[in-house]
Amino acid sequence: MVAGMSHEVAVLPVPGGNDHNLPLAGRTGQTPFDYPDAVRMAKDYPDIVKRGLQMKKAGNAIVSFLGGREVHPINVRVGGFYRVPAKQEFNQLAEKLKWGRDAALETVQWTAQLAFPEFEQDYEFVALQHPGEYPFNEGRLVSNVGLDIAVREYEDHFVEEHVPYSNALHSIHKGRGAYFVGPLARYNLNFDRLSPLSQEAARNAGLGQQCRNPFKSIIVRSVEIVYAFDEALRIIEEYEKPEQPAVEIHPRAATGYACTEVPRGILYHRYRIDDEGLILDAKIIPPTSQNQKIIENDLYRYVEQAIDLPEDVLTWQCEQAIRNYDPCISCATHFLKLHIERE
Image (cartoon, rainbow, N blue to C red; front, side, top):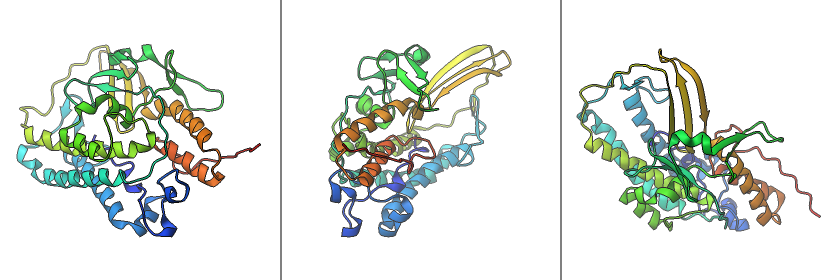
């Protein structure tokens, strides 16, 4: 979770500032964002951007340390690792993570100062839930409206549909429609599984155990970063080197199902293999495609309440409504062409 926690930090908006650089909240009362990218933000607030980039670097250090390199790790194999470190080798990494945890706590407090639109919706949140940990790799799929299933049952309850106006598939919960995955879903369904330090950080930031405003996901993401550093340090503290770096695998014909919680939400994958271990069939449903329909719903609802804003401001805020979900599409940041026909 630490390795992928860096998506928003380097492009955070900033509260206050000089008059000409006031957040949009200072001019419209609607949104805290004013900088189009981290490069331009860094000119006015270099320390904030540097802190975000250093947290990203600390997270990447875990992947590099365990995986052999930051991108596309080479030390991971089926059944474990090619090599596992001795306990004392973690010492230098732990120091970076302690700094990262402190920086993450500062980031939670900083994001909590931002102004946010009033925009709470009645979402169905879906996430993993495990009795002993905040969701990551294991557990059942649950929701706030009664879903509680094994991961292997995913396709019995969720389906991807074609819509006539887009090439993107829309995932829906059968019989219910759009659903919400990602930080807000994990937080709302698993607050009690956050570490005590993370829970304290959330409360100090003004969050309760429930948060239904997607614009505040930036605070929730920051709380999750605190948890990621805190959990990484706990694992290092309790780590004992195993006798073998990997368990021996004997292929057999079978179908495997899994959900993992990546920063954007649940990633569902199913694989069917033969006796040689070759993949015969695979299905992967990433969180962005699962959130596609709820993103559209947010846009409809947000435009309804903000329709009287100037067109350029409304366009900007609609782009922010999309970025609340951190969608992994190249056009996510600046793409929207909004045309309003006013009667």
